[in-house]
Image 1 (cartoon, rainbow, N blue to C red):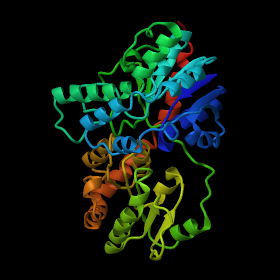
Image 2 (image 1 turned 90 degrees about the horizontal axis):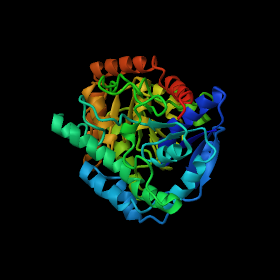
Image 3 (image 1 turned 180 degrees about the vertical axis):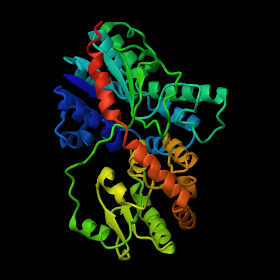
Image 4 (image 1 turned 90 degrees about the vertical axis):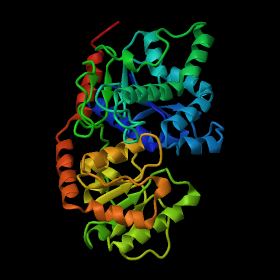
Length: 416
């Protein structure tokens, strides 16, 4: 049994579900840890779940703290917020550690470092699977500082120090408490684990295209990156309204901000989107805003439509810049209009702009219908359209998921 340890939102789980599906294709038994808020979602793909009774949705976390965590727009604010949340995970971590029992290998998200230490105790391999480039290097800033600071040697070093510390904080205290409680000592190699994945038994796999952030040549050979871990929805069938809309005119512009909007913000941001689309005379699809009354015939709303299916049918995509959403936009080969809200979203927004496949980012706090008009208009620049199409074509040639699973299976051949 291979156990995959993950937590977070729907978007956080998608690359790990993709890994699980590919591992099953290759004959392995696999399960994913999931709290109540994501358990049904994971099971819907035919993947076994080790249920975690406590997750962020029912852990009695101060809603204001969660709001700050989801809207941190600078790395120091992010670090302070993660520090405040480090006491929340003890019971959740105990259940996650139990999920590791009986496994032959552990794959874990960088915010779930218990996977590494549990594997060490059981003398089995562990694989760090990151949904973004994570390892310090001499080429570019980390995803918590990219686009916000000048790329200098000192800033690069600081950016990775902050990223490592933030992610290690997510579970460090709870790991320490759990090992003291269970074994009367600290785990072996106690500390941030990312640089410990430097051998074939403990490799790292990174979900990122080399056409977006190229794998730095200075990384050790056991850090593997050859493309995204896409979760394709091959059997998706759209509703009649969406099918009719897509076939009745020119390609529309997608606008959606995932789970970043609070309920009391949805109508406000929907109106910004509607006004902008009407001003530029573009058809549009609004995603995640709920039901909106009296929409013009040129705009519709949709729910839970897979981006992998929808984005290639768009003229441009406007979103919050989540790693997975950005990846689907890049693969679709259409221009990106990214409105980052927090955390690594700024990195994907500025990277798309730097590569010429997207427009200059608009920060959430600065978004107005007029600025969105300017961005949509810019997205139809011939060079951006050409660049986006070419990047999309190249990304489709990568085999990141298949290569990553081969690395995982190979690690089983390297025993303690």
